[in-house]
Image 1 (tube, helix red, strand yellow):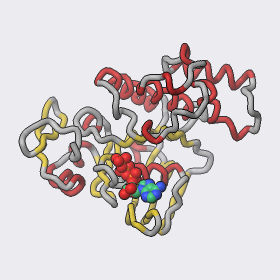
Image 2 (spheres, protein in one colour):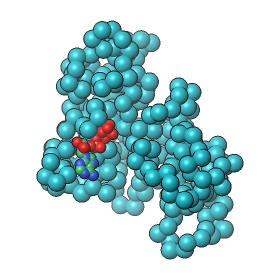
Image 3 (tube, protein in one colour):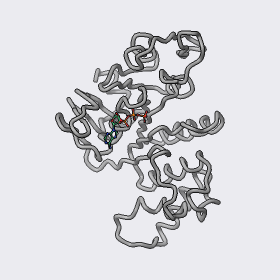
Image 4 (tube, helix red, strand yellow):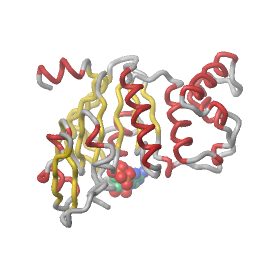
Length: 262
Ligand SMILES: Nc1ncnc2c1ncn2[C@@H]1O[C@H](COP(=O)(O)OP(=O)(O)OP(=O)(O)O)[C@@H](O)[C@H]1O
């Protein structure tokens, strides 16, 4: 990092250096150098299958690098919010029970009084306190997303990793989600999300990482949302205009695009 970056971004929480990772010897990410710092709010963009979720799991620690190293600041709790499509919604649990899973390592199958109070507080904070006893399947997509954020927050994370927090929700819910994440960031939580939405989400974030089997570019939206970087990342030519000081991505026909894959 440059001196300016280091001052603005704060101390490093996790650093990947020369990381390679693949499934069954099929390489997914190669030569990844990436730092996530205490004041970061990062969006990871790239087409489907480019390695975004794999990168999140490396940062979380559930994927171990085959080459290279991952250094973590000791004692940093990391919260993870999965992509909703990957969740088994038939699992017979209520919202409160699902959130309590964040504390399962404490060994008790039932919640303590402190657990109950903490769960109620975090669900209220996320505006879903009234849904605590509902089955998880009965929630809307936006509410399910909030439930997983509640579960992640119960661990009091310094770093929150979220896979596609705005996919499949309407514009108002997307707006609410970005507000919530901005508030958490202002409270001192470092945030890294993946997104396919270049115009609605990525261009509003302070820092972006473009991924396609490797890190193609990293920096501010103005540095990353450029025709050469987008073409290298998404494999398709795109135009970039500027509107109210922010980049706006259009496909070759001049239509607004959510990502290179749509
Ligand atoms: N558990 C797994 N076993 C084998 N291959 C996997 C596994 N998870 C992911 N892959 C493969 O690794 C590649 C990268 O997947 P990853 O989920 O990281 O991509 P992504 O950028 O998050 O995609 P999307 O935007 O569709 O969520 C893909 O080719 C995928 O099929």
